[in-house]
Image (cartoon, rainbow, N blue to C red; front, side):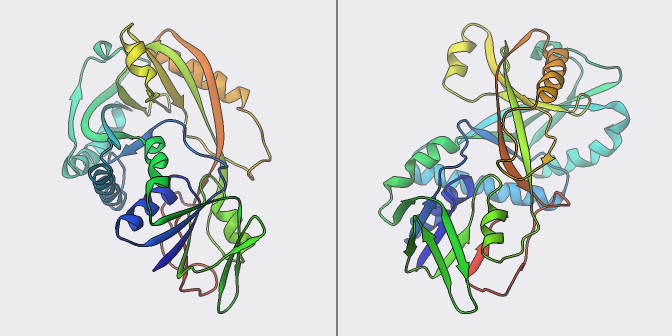
Length: 321
């Protein structure tokens, strides 16, 4: 069986590995437009049972890849969730779901020993273990070229769909031999590729932003629903070196989405930097802004996974949303 995967980001890379390990011949098309440069968060501390189930499945996938590739894909991380006290009764129901997912969760009284400051009255602090990981996508994607069953093609793909065939064109050359075609374009390019192919998908592109700070050392992920921000270590080799001096590079963001077409805006918004910097310093104390990045991502209108048929009936065309 031959499979053509369009998009060499996180989903495309993981799927390519899984298929190649099962002796499927894969052609991976990678435009190189947007890739993670550092590990990203994988969490089971979610709000809905269905999402937690999917997260547990993806965790098993990463563990399988770790065993087969001989690399450490997952880095377990403790996390601290800060919520207003009036929300605790609702959160207690979620804690039961997190326990069922394998996380160890408890309420703590003192966050000072974790290098955090109280930012408002009536805050509740929840410490979790075995619920979060940093995923080393960078190392995972580097291993893609080492598989004999993988054909790697660099370039931007165009998909043409007719009633009885699918054609993928890269660098003005048509790729032949695909039994299945899977669109996994990273960032906000799934909707672009699908739209150009005449496929309807319920996706909205948005601008995502993050900032990096030099601060006191932290070795956990912070989900702060009082200040509406998140923070976590950068996840690079610098973490260990800086940690010897009691310092960390901390990535922070607000998780807000600004709907916009890819490429229409450049640079990180000054309003974002001012707001996130103020909130990070409120929680950490001294923190110095040292950099920022932005990219384009996609989300469904209701912020939930999109599963099922969409667009014209093409049984051999699949989009991972």
